[in-house]
Image 1 (tube, rainbow, N blue to C red):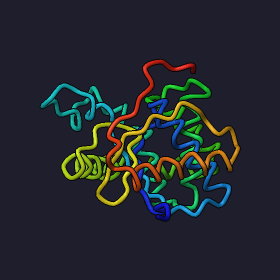
Image 2: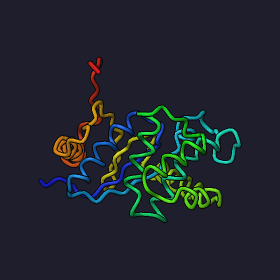
Image 3: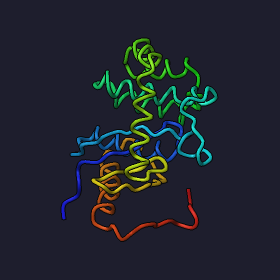
Image 4: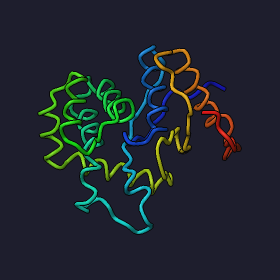
Length: 201
């Protein structure tokens, strides 16, 4: 059975496991991996909040949407810059320790990725990116019972995956890692959970 090459994956820039998984995806794509990837925003405040809690319109949670909204804006309006922006925002949080609730930090990450940061943040301020995030997040929850990031979605199968390593620019490792994940999803639906009791990392 051939590996699926078309898949979706959720992200929130604050999650270290999303950072690991997306590093593999980005390095794999840079190495010309034959994947058709759909990047789906997932707002962790809503996903991990108390049952029944609605964070979408709560002013206390709006700053946490900033980087995700910037990513969605670039994905939908400045597509040629998306992969670079995606990498830059993850790096800002996990390599540089930046607070992605800080508009100046997000602006700087956008500049480093080569996109017009002012134009992106103007779109964010217009409000439509937050609506897109909510619609895509809620669709994942309602249709596939997604609960976190990174979740890989292949057809009607959604699987939450924690990768403990990063490819560090090794595109062959990146491709092999993601292909292994896709193969498990596609070829082994009976494997519902597989988790080490201890981690050496």
